[in-house]
Length: 353
Image (tube, rainbow, N blue to C red):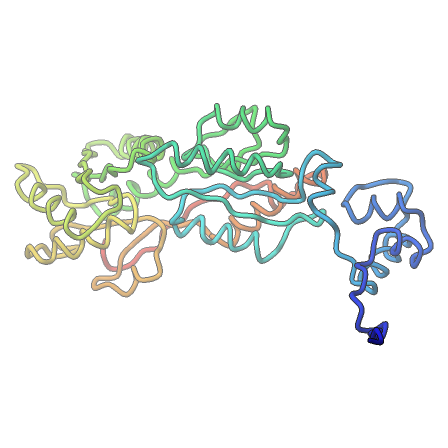
């Protein structure tokens, strides 16, 4: 039987190699390696770099990321490690990072876990991420320990940006001034004439440090005014996430207090919104009987009746600053002056206060 030879155009095509890119661009293989691996070198002029990138695009060249990782000792991945589900602030920061992208051909990869009740699950996710040999990591010290950061450094990850509510001289820190949130909360309620103010302490242990700093800011504002009491009220700890059922239990205890506060800083909108519902179910008028203030400016807060007063950061500015700080770690170039300014929270006054 006569063998049928398929036309050449039906044969599988060999993927273009870095050698093919070098030949088309008229440069050396080493120069192609520098450019396509994101390595800065004085041996590659801007003109040659442009020719190399154009040749790679023309040929449809795709780098072999696993081989690159083995050669360099790390991958092109910049890892983001936060617990899921993300809060609104983290959602906006991560969204901006994905939208704007990172320098040096870095690929943004998200890693997460979903249970603070089981630290082992967090550890598995964290060490699985380290096994990928990421170029760098953006994470939070509200969720990780310093030992985790040390482990990442020991594995060879040098570019680490940590989000935290305190400054750290030995870490690249994306600082959130939450003490200022507490000061703004107390100052606003005091300016409304309240002298018996309560603050909700969340049941989530991750919020312990942020709570203490906010409370310190509230006490500082109260000290400036004089004569104001700041009471701590614990939210039920059965569920770490606030719920209407927990808010009803909280409200029952609140109404039984011999000296009821006239204003409550509910720590976050997640606590404030179900609390407003529970209070109104119990016949409490807001803000006439008790004023309520939250934090984060969740989009449905202004849809409540009354609309929720809150404190927020500019999330788009937070995201842009995160991108700038990460890119500085990647490239080694200084951060632009406009991104050196730490973000400041501000009040969004509505009807609930």
